[in-house]
Image 1 (tube, rainbow over the protein chains, first blue to last red):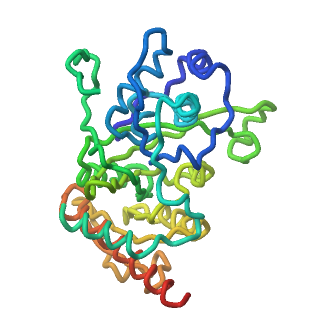
Image 2: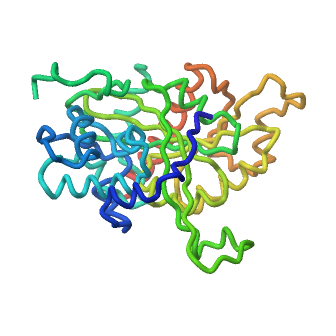
Image 3: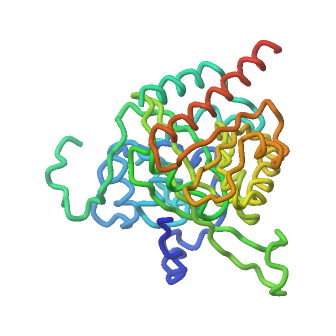
Length: 120
Length: 208
């Protein structure tokens, strides 16, 4: 297991990062595998976490990858991403039509996945 | 953004970026008890070194931590690993290694809604871990296959038939052996799952 120690030492830091917000952000926009792309370069004076996200997302990166790179919980990263999205600094490529949990994915998509796996 | 030369390379974490055309992220979850080889399986097929991240879990009201008698809410985190496979220019598959312990399932919907399907990774020396995972996946109506990670030091070898019986696994759910360390085995497990999902989807599409 490659488990890092949980970031228990700095709850204050996480509180500061999100401006004290701790609500569960809208998970339909920022699913774990929503791909995030920067729409601008970081600017001086920008919050350091925003700078890191904008730099990281010059190429598409999933929400979960951003969280791992920033070493922050998913919930905190979602709040940061909401801010950047609201400011038009990133775009979000959402996963397939946020299907209801009980819906099976369609066969055409699965065929594509199978093809990709067989070519590995 | 074509002048990336000015970026300080010392700060850039080591990572392989996705193709710029990537537009669809997909999820498959590998569920299993501690030490069963989830991360090993992810690593064997992932194009990146498995990464680790975590999510908050508020324990109040979920009945997990009743013994402490604390009146206030306590927040803990649940950690999990993941890897990545670029299937083609636009589709990216993320593989999540999810701990099978009880408290984790409270986060299932928040983390894994819309997942294509799951692999239950079984260690025959600790079969009871798998019963619970299978029960929870059925509850969440997540289609799955069962893969038995064969450990070299497993003294009492059980056949797949014996394991199917022990897990009370219905005949239509695929069950296979694997060595989670071997890339071709990891690939075969994933193909078995997606092939299973494909057949389920076809069957559903023809009846509707």
